[in-house]
Length: 155
Image 1: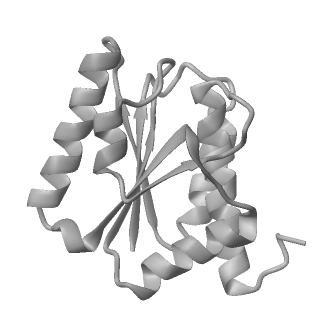
Image 2 (image 1 turned 60 degrees about the horizontal axis):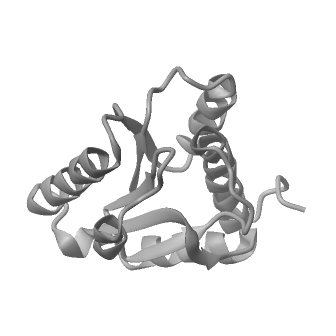
């Protein structure tokens, strides 16, 4: 399985980028993980770019059956770390080839983007800056893989 994280915003606009890289490197021991950054030009344009990328993924090698899209949005369903790991394990069991997470910009994701997703999740009821969401997601992905493998990281 390959994980792609689509981010609206610039890669270097966040002081925690070193930690994001560290967790991404840790994730790479379990699966391929890449970050794709989309320069923000305004909410409507940003969401159109995300939809274009998702459509391209679907029409490319993954196809809709091999693609699973997770929109990160404050109105989504909340998971604890074990349930999040279980969701990822289910994707692996269902032979999902590409698992895509979409992180919106400062103005969030449109209904159209959320409708393209298989699931919409919220990392918390609290609102986080989109830059911080990158770090939280990277850490939770790493934690999920350690839970799946029964490793010590998650207590």
